[in-house]
Length: 262
Image (cartoon, rainbow, N blue to C red):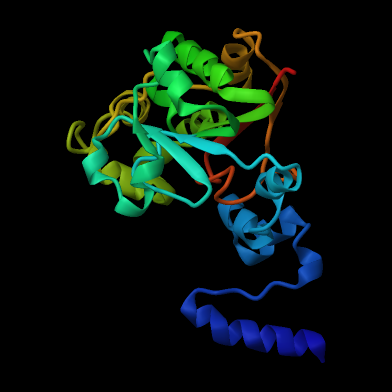
C-alpha cells in the first residue's frame, strides 16, 4: 500500500520536475543516480542540512570570526569580506564589513588592520591566481588566522573536467550547453574539442583561469607555506561538507580544508 501511494505521488509531482525519495534511500548514491536520475549536485542538495557541516562545527567550537576572500558581490551574515571592487558598489548593509584589498600583494599594515580570523574561505577564486600568486595569498591567509583556525579553498576539480573533456562534454554534452553558447563567440562550432576545453581553462568571460588543480596540486601549494596541518579534501560525503557553505558548485568542486598549526 505504501509503495503504491509513493508511486502515485511521484507520478503527480514529477510533472513539475520534482521527485519524492524515501528517506532510507538517501544513502544509496547508485540508486539515486540510476533510478531517480539525480546528478551528484542534486544528491548533495537532498542530503544537505543547513545547520550542519563545517558551519555548525565552527559555531560549536566558538570560532565565529569569518573572512570571505573574493566574494564577487555575494554576501552572507557572519562574514567579513575582501575583494578588489570599489566600496561604493557594495550593498550598504555589508559595507562596514568590506575591505577593498588585493590579497596577492597586500602590505603587512593592511593585513594587520583586518585583524585575526577563525575561518577564511575562498570559493572559486584561487584558480584565478598563478601558483606563485597563490602561495602569497595562502601565506597572507596564514598571517590572518588565529592558531587552530581553518582555511577553506574551493576550486574547479581538474579531475572532473578532464573526465568531461574525454567524454567530449565540452563540445557536445547537454550539461555544458550554456558554456558552449559563449565559447562559440571565440571558437567555431566545428572546432575540435580541445579548443572548447582551452576556453574553459584559459579564457573565461570575465576573469581567466590561470591554473588548474587536483587535490594533490592544491595541497602542494598550501603545504609550501609550512603554516598548515591537517590538510584534507572535503568530498561530497564528508561530514563537514554542506551546500553552499563548502561546496557552492557541487558538480565540479574540489574543496580543501586546512588548519593553521598552533
